[in-house]
Amino acid sequence: MVDNLSEEKVVALVHYWSDGSKDDLESALSIFSKAERYTASLFFLHLAIEKKLKAAYVKKTKCHAPFTHNLLVLIEKLGWETTKENLTLAAEINEFNTEARYPDQKLDFHKRATKEFTESYLGKGKDFLQWIEVNSQNA
Image 1 (cartoon, one colour):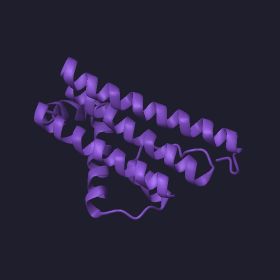
Image 2 (cartoon, rainbow, N blue to C red; image 1 turned 90 degrees about the horizontal axis):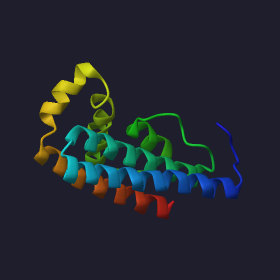
Image 3 (cartoon, rainbow, N blue to C red; image 1 turned 90 degrees about the vertical axis):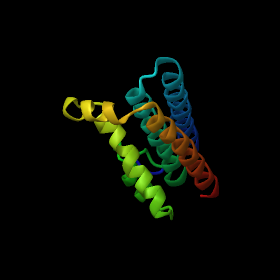
């Protein structure tokens, strides 16, 4: 990890991660509404949250984002106080990254990822993204 990034590089990286987060959320919502591919929608939701956390990390630390997909690790590295509910939600959404990728888990995940399940998590995910935004602004 490189410390003490220039302000210009910090701004560029924050935009990179934030723009990626917005694009991935739009993809999650589009896939949900148009293609009805719920596992893919949830996978993109995870990416949106991961990238938003990485943008917050770069903004706060002035360092490159950690090489991890684990939302709990990113929250811990940010040092933000949060609720047990937020940590539980982050742990649940973490599973969407792994379960959408690997064949052994994909079949079971596909069965769980109904329209209602996905719609619920998309709503929770949007709220979580807002929580990240608020914490990032207050940092």
